[in-house]
Image (tube, rainbow, N blue to C red; front, side, top):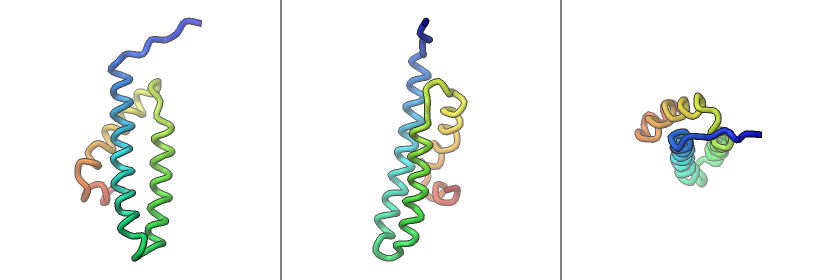
Length: 89
């Protein structure tokens, strides 16, 4: 079976998408810690949303370029602007 060569650019774009999702998770995690004492239910709801982000992150595959580019386009601007992040999250 011949191996399909994957370009460095594709690998790099996949790593960028994964890092963007890491940043999104960090934003959510910080909010969870802020809410834990004052509003445990809201903190738990955010934990569930964070698990959804983890699932998306775990599903990112180098072979799925369209998904990678969609994640970068959707989440990239969100993690750059926390107000936008929470408005769209």
